[in-house]
Length: 141
Image (cartoon, rainbow, N blue to C red; front, side, top):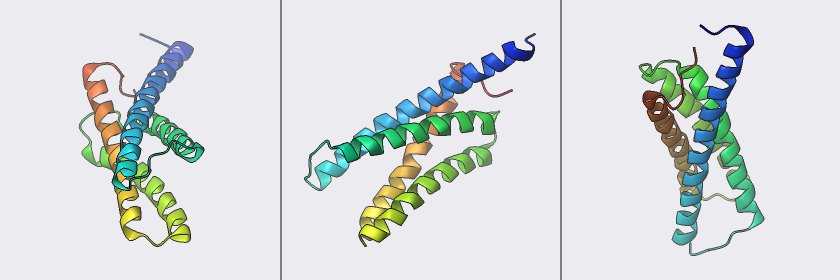
């Protein structure tokens, strides 16, 4: 049985692993989506804005992983899982829509970006569920 700071250190390590896994998954899929967007609109460039967006996506993925591990605790509560995914996805989507509405009125672009946000966190949530089932990350106790 683990007590005190040993238990706290273990919990921090498991949260770090969950955050790292989610950040990596979100960053990889964000990069794939960004390449898809560039291919769709025939604009291929890797500029500083894309790098900043990638860093923000990875950072939010890491925070998602830590929060998801804490909120889920068991693998059976689907409502909590969907709630965390929707919370992170909608906050990111609304931020993009807010900026997008000010800069442009392209409904299709805003819809695609909003869907992308929800999909990024859904994929990260599924990956964390698999990681917890496999024992790679322990659920929060």
